[in-house]
Image (cartoon, rainbow, N blue to C red):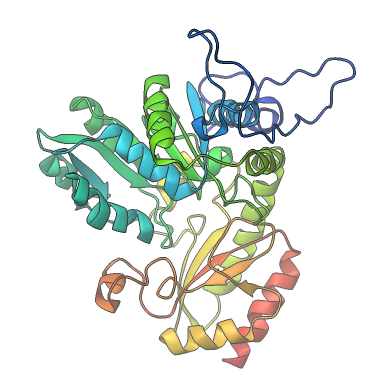
Length: 391
């Protein structure tokens, strides 16, 4: 696995999660940066002064977390927004205009796919979807009007791990930016910039905040791109509330230790599930049986993530029974928090797709997505074992 300090050296990822905002308290100052819970700030008489306005995303609390995101990703600049979809949408709007074209992975979070298939075409932007394992398909899909390549790694919910390196090389050949949603990986497991990615987006609601009490998004990349994303944010309005930004900052302070525990618990759970006779298949990049295990081993640090996907032998009916039988693990449509959560993508993220389309994407009925939390692993295995025995 790659070194945790990243290609630029310097401080490690856990240190950056605590000190990456550059906050340096003087004697008498609070050790924890304060919340600037204000909509607006005094000033504006001099045209040279920057107007500080929370909708603009330049509130001091927002700025500090943006700097920390950039430091964690080894990027030039970072911006925090009101949600992960806000970050994705503003990034795509910043990089395209009417008549432009995107090439994107066919394996995407359901709302991202709907944004590309249904919403952006209303603004004159079209998308071609390609399989991430076939670089030649991506090359053929690129047009004169193509403005970016877009992937997720790992993918939601199938946990496939596309190798961004050949696609990043292809993007450079055509002078295009490469954009990656790295929500499941976090900067602890992977820094996309080290593999040629230009812009990284996150649903910060998930692992970055880590406590299931924040809705936020983040984007990091070159300064000119982030400035354009911020311009879109000012127009469309998805800035993050200062208190939510402060809670996100709190989560980033423990990101390193949390991700290690998520990864270790996920390993134990995935190995248990792979050996159970009522489980047809398990998707976790750390398993030797995973189709992208070798790629993940080259890309990831410290572990293989806290998400586990599995398909039950009894299909959708068995998955329904499992959901009703679990006691410790809660049924909920999110992930990345300290508590373990389970869901069926056919009812949540990919509910808009037909059964056949879901199956073609590796999400058959009976597919269960498990966000492995920080509980004692023995308790998680016991809960799963009892629930599986009952179905």
